Image 1 (cartoon, one colour):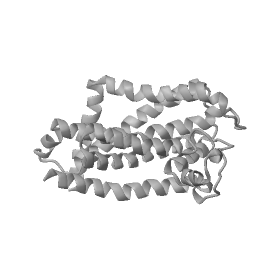
Image 2 (image 1 turned 90 degrees about the horizontal axis):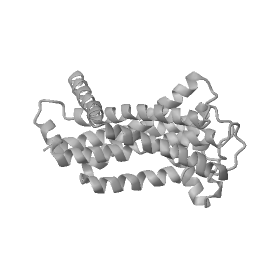
Image 3 (image 1 turned 135 degrees about the horizontal axis):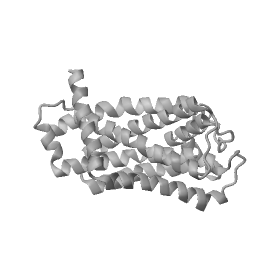
Length: 265
C-alpha cells in the first residue's frame, strides 16, 4: 500500500514539473521575484546597515533572502492547490484509482523541487553581487539541505490552508499574512536590537530567525546580528531549526492528509 501511494505521488510530482515546462511563465516569475529581492536589499538597503562581518552585509543578507524565499512556499502551495480545486482538477484526481494522500504528497514534492531550482538561481545572483560562503562544500550543502527541508515543512501548512480556505484570492491573503510577519519580524535583514523588547523575544523564537541563523552558521558567517534575548534558539540555531521542521511536519502532514480525505467525500 505504501509503495503504491509513493508511486502515485511520483506521478503527481511529474505532473507538477511538466506544468512548469508547459507554462514557462510560472518558472520565470518564480525565479525573477527572489532575484529582485537580492538586488533590492543588496544595493538599496545594504549601504544603510553597518556590520563588522568580513565580506560586508551581503554575507548576512543572502541567508535571509534564501529563508524568505522558501518561506513563501507556504503561500504558493496553498494558492496552487486552491486553484486546482476551483478548476475541478482535484475532483478528476478523486475519480482515478490512486491513493488519496498521493495528490497532496505529490504537490509538496513538486514545490520542493521547484525550490531547489529557485535557490540555485538565487545563489548565482548572490555570487554575482559578492556573496561568498566560506565554510566549505559540506557545510554549504548542508545549509541548502536545511533550506529544502524548511520549505518542504512549510508546504504542508500551505496544503492545510489551501484545503481549508479553498478560494484562491483568500488563500493568497492568508498566506502572505502569515509569511510576511514571520520574515520581517526576524533577524533576516536587520538586527533585532532596535525592536521593542517583546518583539525581540518573538524574533528570536521565530522559526525564520532560527533558520536564518542556522544558514549563516553553515555558510561561514562570523558575526551574526546579535542575540538580544539570550534565548536557546539564538544559541542553538541548528538544533532549533531541525526541531521546528520536524514539529511542523509531525503536525501538518497527518492534518493535511486527513483534511484532504474528508474533503474528498
